[in-house]
Each structure stands twice: as C-alpha cells, then as structure tokens.
Image (cartoon, rainbow, N blue to C red; front, top):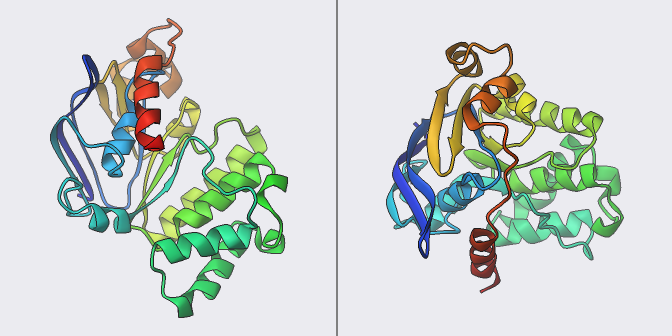
Length: 259
C-alpha cells in the first residue's frame, strides 16, 4: 500500500470540505479520484501532498506521515497541478533545471535526466524556447516531465488534460500509461473527463460533498449501478444538477498559497 487515507477531514471555518473519507492506493496502480465541482478532490490532493494540513484523520504516503515527515513525503511524489505552474519567461530547459536544483538532483545527473525526460515527452528540440510560446499540450507535457525529474514513487495529476483537444489528451495519456508500465510508478489523478478514468484507471473512488460514495474498479462501479459506462454511473450517483465550485473554500485555499 503506497497511500493510506483514514477518516480524513478538512474544514475551512464552518465549512467541511472533506468529510471523513478513507481509501487506499496500491503501489503501481493507476487510481482516479472523481467528483463534481466542489466535491473535495483538489483539497484532498493538497493534503496528500503536504500543501494543506488535515483537520483530523491520518495520511500515509510511501510509508511516511505528511504531518511529521513532509520532506520524505515530498521526495516520494511528483505533481502536476490543475493550474499552470511553469515560469513562462524561462525556457523549457531552464524550468527543468530549476526544478532539479530544488529537488537536489545530483549535479552530475541533471543534464542526462533532463535530456532523457524532454526526449520522452518529445520536447528536446524545444528546450531553448520560452514557455510563453508553448501550446497548452506542450506545457502539460513539460509539467509531467518536470514532475518526474527526481524519480518519484507517485505521480499526482490534478486535471492533467483540462482544456486540451482530444488528440493532445490521448497523447498525454499514452505517456502516462507508458510511465506507469515501464517505471512501475503509481499514478493518482483527478479528471472531469469521466471516460478517461473508465479507460485507464485500475480503481476509482468517487466523492461528493466531501464523502466517498463509490469505491471499486470501473467495471465494479458500472455493475453496481447497472450502467454501460462510468459516466452514466457517475451521474446516477451524483445527480444531474450543475455544481458550482465553492468560492469561499477556493478563496481560502488560494490565500494559503499566497502566504
């Protein structure tokens, strides 16, 4: 078990965003955390990756508790955030090199690792180009490459294909599946494209209003809900009402990042 979550709770003032959730992720698994807007997905990832402290409950990532061993946990994972996090005034190579320095990748290994990863995501020929000239798909591929520089045990992906065209989305998922297969890397992702989870996830947890409402393989969840695809099961479980992201909770999280 590479991730263990038990009775996890996160409150912002009087609002409970994550409400007593529990789940496990096996090593080498492709795991999807799904839910409507405001369900608590991003807040959960931020707790798993040491950005936010839990209000209560416990988390173990690669054998370490983020509350007591933040550095060990951070060395265990790479992350691609929902919002872009690249420095657009730097080149692709400079962004990679800066990340390598921050994660203490040995100086003698940096150049080869950066080249290998940029070649893997087919951006080596763009290494000297500034990020502001990149397309959305190129930025996503670079963020994935950057997240892999320190050879993490877990790759967290928060909406990795948001806003991308179907061709680019498929291309990125081919990279991710190849990484999972060749590197035996655990992949933990969120997405609003439910068909992505249906196709690539080994196991799925669906949360709504901060609570776990389904946990199983895509096939198990479809069978339990008597549906032909995972999106139908998702809608059956969460309803058809359009959800708005909770502005108060988003603002609180945003202020935490700006401190």
